[in-house]
Length: 257
Length: 257
Image (cartoon, rainbow over all chains, first blue to last red; front, side):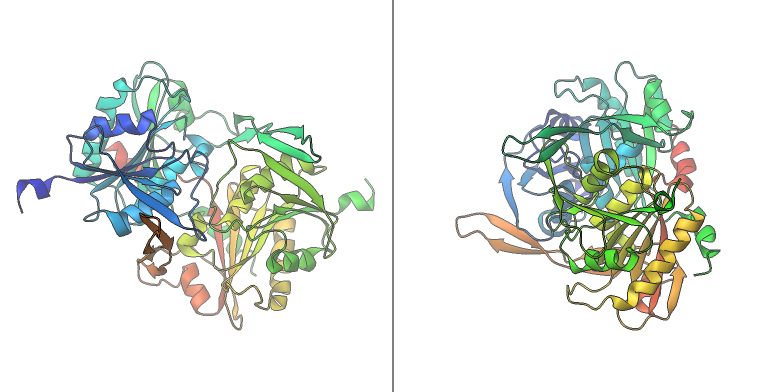
């Protein structure tokens, strides 16, 4: 094996689309750490959760490498589609790691279930690939990201070196403002409230816009991602796609169905 | 409180769309158990995962009640959108239970993360509403469902009576063929393989169709939904939207980031 072959293969995707500043920063930050392939949605896919394209075609076209990437593909599908196609049909071998983001906006707490960024990371996890989603809690596409470079490199380097536990990917969120440090956290219990604005269609009927804001459903425990982010820490939540509520199994068994 | 007000409010949704045979059967099966409101997608939303409509309008129109339902709405959104709008903007009060399905096709094992049916149930769970997703492991829209009636009524009745553990919804899958009984299970570790068929666009470029088949990633343990379904049992997986990989937290803490 020559030196070139030993460099880690790094797959990068996101949900804000291949031209978003967040993914361009991510590619730039890690481009010297391995052979970087970008397979990302051609359009914004925010809030697409773990959607996949079951009954439609997915167009894929090669794009010009940027920020030190080796190969880039624009994929007219969801973030999960991108990772599936990358692994199955585009990459020269199984990647050593999949990075997703940097998302423009929080994917902490309950946001993780709606997140296309995290769906890309989770899809890689399902394929047995170590994976990390990175998000900055700032929706502004012009938000500065340069100060995230060293954190992202350190987390990526450590994951490449040590691997990740079985069925586990990382959900990393960065706070706004000065960063005090990093914390390993659990997902805070939150939900969105007052979610819809109803309007009248001038041609008849009603339609809705999703609005609303997140609320906490528990005391803001210091072990949660919500606490970490609101106190200036980077939150790192080990995240799984085994959705079994293991501790609830004995309760339902007692139903004696 | 008069007798009418004491009847449970049952919200029903799905991902195959409001006209699918599965949801019509589900409404029929439980219509005498409470006040049934249907808020379901106007079109097929299979594989939409937990997608929500963040940057677009969601049209909602009242439809004619059927199968003993009280009120029905067609919603031009995803399954998660349907439950959000139902709870926030359409229903007269918080429902006592949300039922989703009956899905045409399996939502067992890893399928749960792609499932719009389960996203509807999970969204209700996030809102604090007891919720159950029902699926039949048969993609045929003409598959008989009458034999599921008593199982669905029993599970729904028990959930209404006993409630569900915190942060837990149920993922119920029915096998094809004769049913031997019901089993409380964990989610089997599976993934999809050989997923894409590549074709040439006659106008230039490549496109892909998602195909493939599921494979098991572990020995087919008797405690899994995959085992239960392949041995003629109904699988009941307590399912959570707390994606924290709790057992992995100490591993990542040792990284000392």
